[in-house]
Length: 69
Image (cartoon, rainbow, N blue to C red):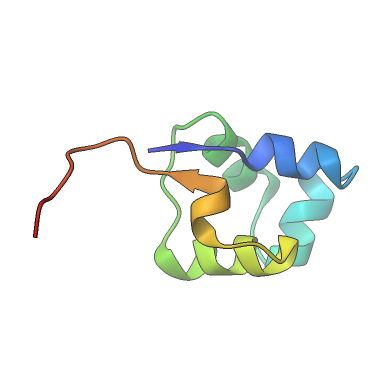
């Protein structure tokens, strides 16, 4: 899974520390997410999307298998 967290953070002129404080996590977690070293929990992904007032899919992009129903 890829993400655009760094882009959204830059668009809002936020440091990693400021974002972490606003979403209730650590700067280290923000760094790990931005570097694709850590997949956030669904709850944290919702907090991040909610903070930026966008859909989760606007920030997190799944690049895995496609499923046909």
